[in-house]
Image (cartoon, rainbow, N blue to C red; front, side, top):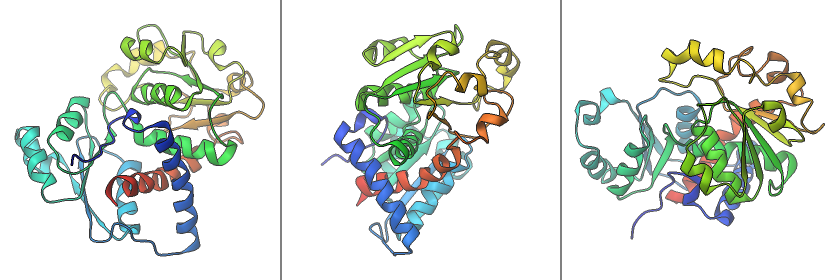
Length: 300
């Protein structure tokens, strides 16, 4: 039987996604109570990183430890992948030795190809197109604060990047409205916009997108690998900073999220990031609990 993979949110049904989110909050309470719960005892997760990480590595490694299992950190220097071994061959070999594989890579095709040839579950820890694990944490945070997100209005401000595109999938899957505000030339993929058009609306004016939003989300203007574009992006995104005046256009009880790391004074003001409407620290912690729920779902 082929294993279940988690490459995008679309690998889950809406019911499965909601179940994982609710399970994440249950696991959070179990952890806080001090109860030992080890459903993955003696199981091994291989973690392959082409891109550096703080939250992804710590959350997956700690999660496997909490569950009684082990995690292996593998950089390109540690495997034959970094020396040109075909992805297909690496997938066949590594999956015969471990119980699950998480990849944080540059090209989305690396993860999809790896999954095609793996005999164990493969998790997308981030690619250039999608970042579904972060969405699990964001959604868990929302559900804990406000309940189900169906029918709510989420506003994305900034680049139409992997985070934005994961929010697009989430909007259609969980039935909420997503307003995207980005500069011309930085829109998400046109095919994805067409596929999610029933729930997604594109703007080039952040003020229009933020009006009456329940949740405002942003990300850095230049992601890893785009540093050479920093100056151009600073100019293009100069009017896309999430500041107090923009937050005032949202609903009075709106919350702010950012997947971190954040650049205060660029994509978000310090007043917003460190303010009362910001839930970024709960959001960051929930990477641990959401991914533990995902690991349990795929590997138990």
